[in-house]
Length: 386
Image (cartoon, rainbow, N blue to C red):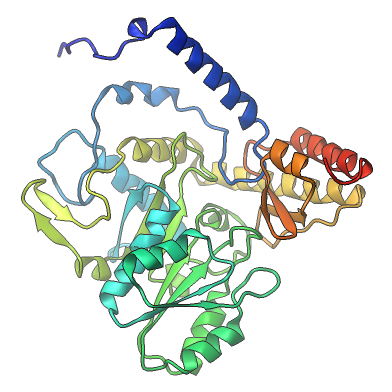
């Protein structure tokens, strides 16, 4: 069917505006090659999907239900969710989920479900938890207590035990980190469940923040427990991290019985309102589907193995230069002492107190590590200011 010409066409753009876009693209292109500190993969190509950008796609409402708005990608979204269901070993007939705007939305959804199920519950989260979680708890007015972290980043299980023990009459809502922001530490779900069992807690909820590691642990040997078979009730995984997309996105999965408690029918859209947002990105599911279908399980095994290989190369190169670096098992987050401000700025390193980290995403190669180490050594030799 013939469509009217678009309202926004390149020939209508003023030369100065075109030059501004060209300059912006050049700056982003240069900066993207020096992005080592944040978990956003830059290795993807979605040109095959560009024709879809010509339509007002909108995945409004529940992806598993029909809707009166037909310009959507719900069918593709459901296929994406099935992949993640398998990755996280969620029950085939008892799970639900949707493609989110990113990890923060997924974490908010998990806490929201838990609070609706247990209005008088208390959320327990460690001090190594992502900064956005404290904001989520304020927004939801959820009662919460911060638990100490162990030196490597895991939650302090003894502190968790002691803190829950004095509040045994209140359902605990555990926010577990499956890969902490700064060190990639994975909270031990077996030990968390052992704490609950030891205290004879009858009702609890466990949400897992697996923003980065949720696309790593399914593809390694001897992975730490992290999925629904390990006792979680919901999980958030990012899509723009290890998979890589040009916009932030993610997936949240939960037990269907919990979601059914909060579902509401909305006549305006002709479907159930089960998500946090009304209108949702319909391009993100397409990109995740495209990545998952072109790579498959074997492809992601290879991608993760390569990321681990570069992480070990970074540790070896930094060690040879006299810089003590390390990573947790099954993590691609390489932790090192905080370098000088010029190195932090040039390589966009994430820092916290006296440490920094490099995350060996799929676009990071040995040449990046070599250049980073050279800059660290140069700065050290210059007196630590570089």
